[in-house]
Amino acid sequence: MAEEEAKYSILREVGRGSYGVVYEAVANRTKRRVAVKRMPCNAPESAELALQEFWALRSIQRQHQNVIQLEECVLQHGRLFQPLENRESGSHLLLVETCLKGRSCAEPRRGCWLWFVMELCQGGTMNEFLLARRGPDAPLNARFMRQLSGAVAFLHRHGIVHRDLKADNVLVACGPGGPVVKVSDFGLSRVCAGAVSRQRFSSACGSSFYMAPEVWEGHATAKADVFALGVIFWAMAERITFRDGDSGRELLGTYIRRGKELIPLGEALLENPNLKLQIPMKNKESMPEDLCQLLHHMLAFNPKERLDASQLEVQIQQISYGKKRKRSGS
Picture 1 (cartoon, rainbow, N blue to C red):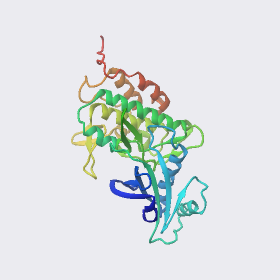
Picture 2 (picture 1 turned 90 degrees about the horizontal axis):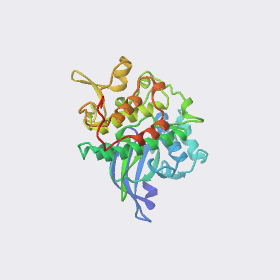
Picture 3 (picture 1 turned 45 degrees about the vertical axis):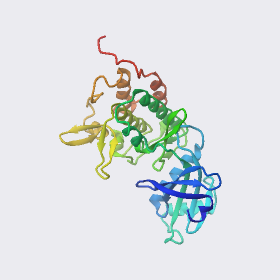
Picture 4 (picture 1 turned 90 degrees about the vertical axis):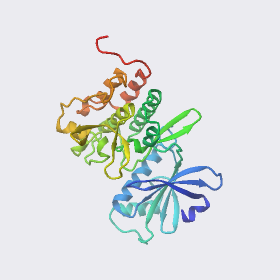
């Protein structure tokens, strides 16, 4: 981090995506390992993503164990580095906001970057963590489902809609009490004024295999996050995967098969709102009946028929994971 090297030393790159690069670093004074995410902000679109992540993480800093913790955020402009504290942090944040208005930053060759210093999750992404274990693990699945449900309910209560939930955007921290998931990557999130249940979003965003039907149409509510969780939970319970067309990576996610083509659930439901999802997909003994019913409520075509995050947080605690699946008529 150039002039920040006195505080942090970059060790290695650990992840790279459309919106930034993540490094493992060490705090030179304490020798504690941290994650450092660098996001460009020298163009209006990239600056908006960086600011959305900053505002979301800053507004809920250190309030929930299943949401990634932000240590600090540093704005780099050319050779100059300055920590950002809040929306009113002075001229340096105004410089970034100037980019959002379509004007050029000074010293364009050096550009503008936001560096997010966050807790390091040694378990990698949830996608990597679960696929390394292959076969379904009911107690682990239940643990992760409860943690994720609690995290999303917390975010919604605090006016934050994530809008890009997927197994690659959830990290795993390995602690003495067992693995803990951390929701991360808030670049597409929205921090809302007032209850999220009243918010409507006109832009479609997210990853196609996790997008709700209404997102495919170009509008959404906070319940699109619940739909994405439904896709994740179903895939987690049965270890259902697909091959990403761009990267070739194996990813957790459910779909509808049409010949050799895999259709995202949301897209298939938009084409046919009366489509009956076959839950479970692989093995009728693979999950309890109450989880099957819960997934149907999370993946409902009509958002009004879908659970909200607070309802999900309560109901997921009652799932009979670890017990035998009830048979119809018994």
